[in-house]
Length: 470
Image 1 (cartoon, rainbow, N blue to C red):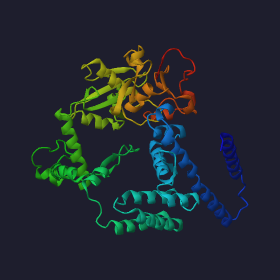
Image 2: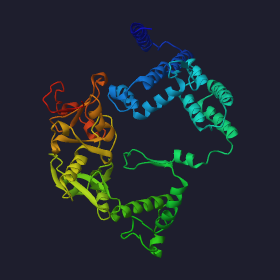
Image 3: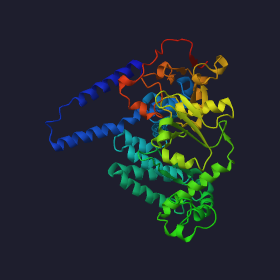
Image 4: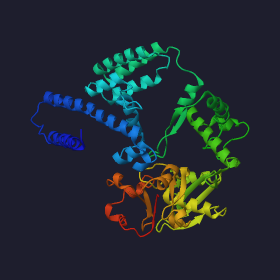
């Protein structure tokens, strides 16, 4: 099929969807609405089938660097304006459900052939597929191919008849029958281990989730037993007990729950480690908390400071922490944005510049990147060092390692706007109107009315203040 036929088919699909979207459904009865909803659901279930083929071809043939990113997942996420997590999910799903080819070009069926066929028939949805793929991920390698095929036929049959919750019950039972002893090997522990610190909520709290290995559990147990005991490390005490044993009064007035005591024990452990000075350096600075605030908020004791990791820290907490940990504190004027004070920055110029960049950029400046300042490198945003760029604070910005590499390996371009922010200009085939500055680390910018936004520079004018790849 040539490109003209593909274009015609896609245009026909768009026209059909436009026609359906324009339907007058006010005259339909409730049963007729449910019938229509069922038809649309059937179409939605089949929609990813062609996407699987597209993604598998790109995965097999495309060089991500030629498309403007270091990985195919980043190419897909940027082009479709979806999250990196969603892009990875689609690529992995396509690898299991899309048609494949051998190295010599011979066609191969999908890894989960029966699941893919059920999706193409519109019998199962993305929730069913997620349950099925998770089941086969957990299925041990010693289960032979004929058994796997029979099991897949069983779960697909159940998925075509039942809701995802019932399907999960079925797969759990099958896994118990096929793998009754479970998998408690070190390799399985290594694969599943991990801790996730969630995004900060409106109340300032973050959700901590994950799985820890027996070794980490054994390490934390005595720490929590000591510092998480009643009366220990109580932030409500004027002089919290850290060493020795708490007195009776401290124990009696400790109203914290066990979970709260465990939290405070881990906080005390972190403070103790930061104060020890044993963590060495990270990105040219001692490993410590780097905080940005304004003179007005600091003097009033109100508002929030921002850490280089992106955490909003209430001013009262900042003042309290200052007594416990070695900080770098950058103070700015709220109205002009000018740097008023850089606490403890006389180590070297590059250290001071990095602190200013933590305060100005807060994280990677490429639009869509969520890497915090702690995970970033300093990037010559106006002109690369090898092209005569200057290591002046007005020409620098933060970029994570992979995005910094984009400038070296692809046709991405960075430049400084008149308002001092770093603009990332993508290659033409990725440029579909996305934002060119990163407001993820500056949500206050997204709340500004459009008329309050400073005018953007014209990216089509090459005034020599650009930094691009070869």
